[in-house]
Image 1 (tube, rainbow, N blue to C red):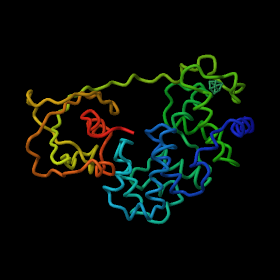
Image 2: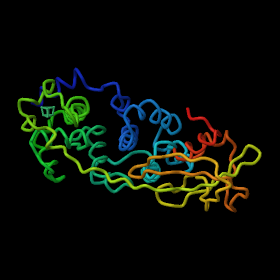
Image 3: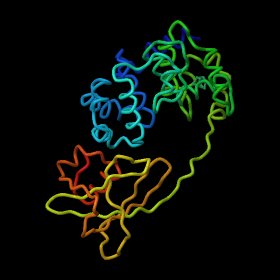
Image 4: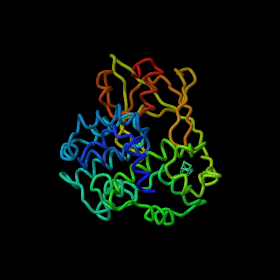
Length: 311
Ligand code: SF4
């Protein structure tokens, strides 16, 4: 089965992904952090090359200001990832540790990322359990709602200890290209003869429906001499980012509304004219906004106001 899986991977795998063609551990680590919540194509085509152009080494990242790192992360969301990446770079400076246990002690590195760095970067004999691999393992062994421990136990059972890196990448691609959440292509699968779940594949991947929370947000817009006011965000989710100031809405000052989706939140955002800038406001020109640490919500607000066009 391992041999068939590797043959399938050799022929069909996504070998062109840049983080698969490097031995640089920092680059592999960065890709894993970016890929946690962002689609492969966006990471590959936009964020990964842009971020590495700015911070090519762990040391350059460690030496940067947090605001510069957040600015390079703008639009990717989940900004705690960028803050933790920066903290980890400061702690390690030149090299990430080689052991799974040591990696786990670093900010923002959980069990998945630690095992991915060990397997993909250091070629260690560890199973990597991302969403795609979990789906394959669940179906392969017909596991309904297994615990993480059980999934790990089964993944270890099939792990190819001679080629752990290629094995994990192969399972990842199999989950992404063949063992799809709906209508898996079992006829094309190299594991079909061993698969215990192929008769009812969707039985093993039922997930709870996400409960969305709706919220209304009200922001003020103060523009003078081609500059707009933003304020530093203190809340944990957007900490260190720049945002429009919150306001109590006054009907006469209404400008525009738009919808925005963020994780489990479905937001209705309303913008109002603000005559006086808040005390702690930062004035930024359109040019300065290009390299400022702003979220995609703020970018959308600027677009709705016709102040900044999205690329
Ligand atoms: S045989 Fe079908 S269900 Fe089983 S691992 Fe392959 S694609 Fe998934």
